[in-house]
Amino acid sequence: MPDAIVCENLVKVYGGVIRAVDGVSLDVPEGEAFGLLGPNGAGKTTMVSILTTLVRPTSGRAIVDGLDVAKHPEEVRRRIGLAFQVSTADGELTGRENLEVAAGLQGIPAPEAHRRIRELLEQMQLAPAADRLVKGYSGGMRRRLELAVGVVHSPKILFLDEPTLGLDPQGRAGFWDYIRHLRKDTGVTLFLTTHYLEEADQLCERLAIVDHGKIVATGRPDELKQRTGGDTVVVKPSHGEDLAPILSAVPGALAVQVIAGAYRVKCDRGEAMVPLIVTACDRAGVEIASVEIRKPSLDEVFLELTGREYREEDTEHGGWASERLGQMRGGRP
Image 1 (cartoon, one colour):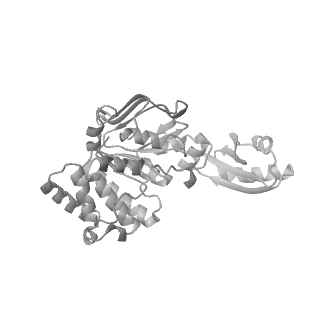
Image 2: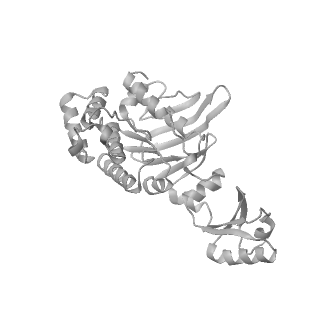
Image 3: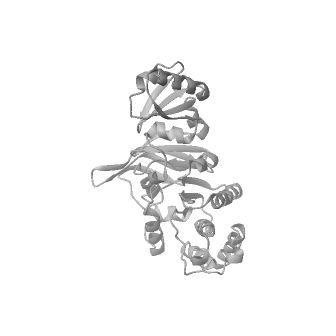
């Protein structure tokens, strides 16, 4: 199966000093759902900006649907769809009018545009609200409308930048149901960044974790979780004592790591390890503030690889989205 997206030793340097993207190579086959995860400043927004023709790479190549994004930006834009974490719908227009504007920008002939808009309004369950001003839409309705705008021209590749940020669980679940149906019906390639790791786990066939501009891990969600090597017992001392010598000597402790004042003990079975840890600390006269068992998860993978929790403050509220929309409406690359 041919690749929809290819990055070859991609580099982006700002100001001659900051390497936002540092030698990234990856490939996304046609029809795959691919997720890009990383803490704030890791380079994922710059990578998406390059792939969507907003930013030119300093060196290396980015190929989208067989086209070099630096050499053929306008043709790339005709083949991709975009949905952002920030609202891009015009609140002073109706839902139908927003779709008509998007179809016009894409050069879709009127008869085809009217048919496509009618279908999308039905598919996104927006038909009853199609002629209402968007400023009266709920958050979930806006997200569905923005998804419809992003796919009105039937793109081959869809970029989603934290599209469910701020939605309640019901709204997120509904949005991803539409994405699943869209992929099943059209086979569109999906390139996703998300704040919610459970979304990436459930929706993406492969993931890449990026940190300091480099890809530090790539694989299927289950493969990445297997890399954590079993359970993790997280121990926090009450008074900041050094627990490393104590915990390392506990039978069954495979490795001990310290992150943000918490001691992470790798082991095969956390339930069996906890009483041994408590006993060892008690004998050493060390008071424990908390003990927690963590099972293999993407959160654990992310923490082990980057040394950071994947929390809301780690997400990038990329200005690339609104800037990108402005470029599209302004008709320039």
